[in-house]
Image (tube, rainbow, N blue to C red):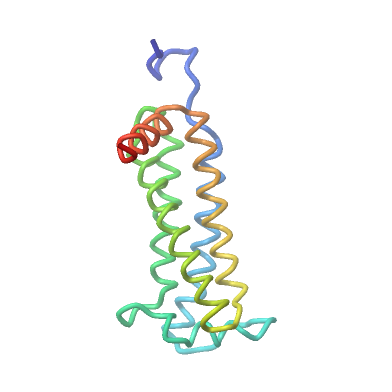
Length: 165
């Protein structure tokens, strides 16, 4: 039987949540820069030259909202959820599930947008690729952390096994 989190022998929340929060803050900075430039209709500083091509394409907005604004929301959610997870007992899954779900959706969106960037627009944006890499790293760390802590990983595996049936 597993000990409750209040017992001295129980492992507390992983410090990796702080790393995920820092990645969220970094991603928030990148996407805020892109969003502010999109709102101001100004070009971004880009050493490769493809940034403004990507950011002015029809794929750069959804319903008139810059895609980077959705990135801002994603990274803010990852950052705040990770801080909640770090400050909560490991059996409190609220922040952990929010981060896991948000990072998972972020990875899928990033894969889709990166494919569009490479094969449809045929230009690359280092900011966009950085954002994609950050959300992938955050999701990877969440998986490692979930396995270390246990309760979130058990819930993910129960969900996975129930959807296989």
